[in-house]
Structure formats: C-alpha cells, structure tokens
Amino acid sequence: MDAVVFTGREQVRIERVPAAIVVEPDDVLLRITRAAICGTDLGMLRQPGQLALGTVLGHEYVGIVEAVGSGVRGFREGDRVSGSDFVACGRCWWCRRGDHWECADRAFFGTGTTFGSALPGAQARLLRVPHGDVVLQLLPASVSDDAGVFFGDVLATGYAAIGRADMLPGDTVAIIGGGPVGQITSLVAQARGAGPVVVVEPVASRRESASALGALAVAPDEARALIDRLTDGRGADAVVDAVGGPIGLNSSFGLVRRRGTVVSIGIHHQEAWPLPVQRAFADELTLRFAIGDSMRDGDQLTALVGSGLLDPTPIATRVVPFADAVEAYADLLSQRSLKIILAL
Ligand SMILES: [Zn+2]
Ligand SMILES: [Zn+2]
Image 1 (tube, rainbow, N blue to C red):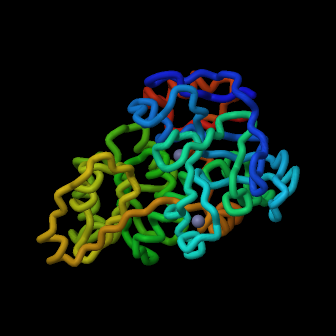
Image 2 (image 1 turned 120 degrees about the vertical axis):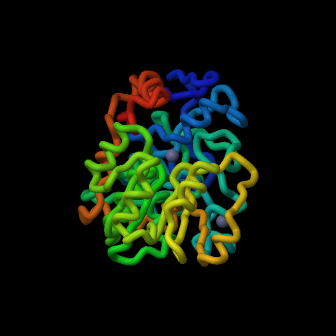
Image 3 (image 1 turned 90 degrees about the vertical axis):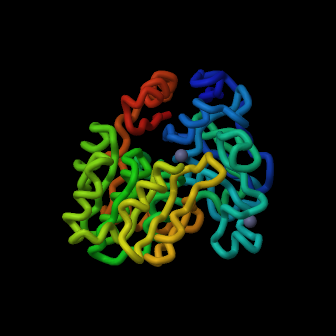
C-alpha cells in the first residue's frame, strides 16, 4: 500500500510498504479516507530523535472499517469512524478511570517510540488499530470526514485544556499560540461560553485566522494591554499555553490574574523551568497540564461538532489529494499553511 514515510530530516516520500492487516483479535483495520498533518509530525521531522527511517507517519485520521478481529464487538465492516492518536487497553486501572494516557499498553501512531511503543501511522491507505473497541468512535452523519479528522488529537487537546481551565461563562480566556491547537482551543472556549477569547500570536496570518474564528487576536507585545482593557487591569481568568517551553509558560504567567488558572498543552522539551513561586503562592495561582484523550471525551466532541456548536474545519487551510502529501509537508514546514488534510 502507499504510505507517507519518513526518509530523513525534513524529508518525506510516498512509498509502497507492506499493507496493514488484522493481527490481534481486538484489531480493527481501517481504509483511511482522511489523514491530517500535525505540528507533531513537523516537529519530529525537524528533530527526528527516536524516529526510525521508513516510519509511516500520521496520527490524525478518519476511515471506513475494512475488517475486524474476532474479538471486536462494537464495529463492523463499513462503519465510518475517527480514532484517538494513541491506543490503550481500556481495561486497566488507569483506563477504567478515563486516564488512557497512563495505560501500560499505550502506543502512539506514526511517531516511532517518542510517546510509547511504535505503531505505523495513518497517512496510508490502511491502518491497523489495536484495541479498536476502545480507540475508535463511530461518526454520525452530522460529522463530516473533514471535521472528524480533528477529533483524535487537535480537538481532544483543546477540549481537555478548557476542561481543566476552571472557566465560567463569560470569563476572559487568553490562548498563547495561534497554531491549529491554539485556534481550536479558542473555538472550544467560545462554544463553552467564554467571554472574550484572546489569541496571542506573533504571525500575522495566524492572527487573521484567529479573528476570522471569533477571537480577539493580538501580537505578544500588545497582549497585556488588551487584556488589561478587557478585565479592568486584573488579567485573564484562564490562560492556555498552546506553545510550550519557557516562552509559553512565561507568557501565560504574564497574563493570568490573581487566583487564575494556567493550563499548559504545548509540548515541553526542556527538563525544568523556574516557576515564579512567590507570586504563584501569594496570588494562589493554579498551573495544570493536559493531554487530549478522545477515548475519554469523544462523545462530547461528537455532540459539540454534530450539533453545529463547533466547526473545526476552517482550521484546515486546504484538503489535498494524498498524492500531494510531499508538497503539503513542504508547505507546512515553511509555515505557509496552518493545517493540511490529505484526502484518500
Ligand atoms: Zn496531531
Ligand atoms: Zn489500560
């Protein structure tokens, strides 16, 4: 089958690889209809670390069930599904709590061993999904393929962030970073009743996207002044760091009000960061981290999107044929596009 494979730093190719098949009784085999390219894919291409040459990339997908293992109960051939970007057993202590990320069986699609055991990725004709009953969710007719491809990672992440932000209706929410995850976090905050949502982003085209999607968009050096105007000088009730690293955390702490909450969903590569602990104590700040989990939150995501309350599709700059994947990667690596979906 054809697949997008990693062939060297900042390089991908479409190559023929052995077709995915059902291996275990709880496997579901999908014929992929949409696979999105993620900032995580781009980050790995720039710093390949644990990514082996020849790895099939991709972890954001929608597909049609092609075959199921003998133990699969919830799906059958022809079902249209989206799925989480990682798999978990669904039976252990952590999974029963809804903390699938902590599962000892965790394996992440298309990222080598960066986040657990390696699983071939979804930018391919076929995808083997272990623990299919746990990992996949049926898409109703009201959710298009182009919307469903956001469920497994980007939308689940934004949803987890706002879920941990202690946000009340009308609250002022600041989001650091206008990449796809920052943009979707803005949409989730708006759908859940936020007051003003401020997206802080240095790149002008991304600020335009944020404005078009209903947020107030501002460059980093103007963010504090805008939020002061909106909050009578108090600061944002909640801040989501969708950048990560010292820049994301420091920016968040610079905008949050006393007794406010910072939720960090950006990936952190550095081991430590100096927490401004005197202020954190005196102002009773809350700092949380969140990782998306569509196995836990998938029903809510379906309800939000299926009801029309939230439409993630404008975040995709383009939907292109699978054959154009190499060009799509080049476009995203040079930041000419925000998000590209491959159609198979
Ligand atoms: Zn992703
Ligand atoms: Zn588990």
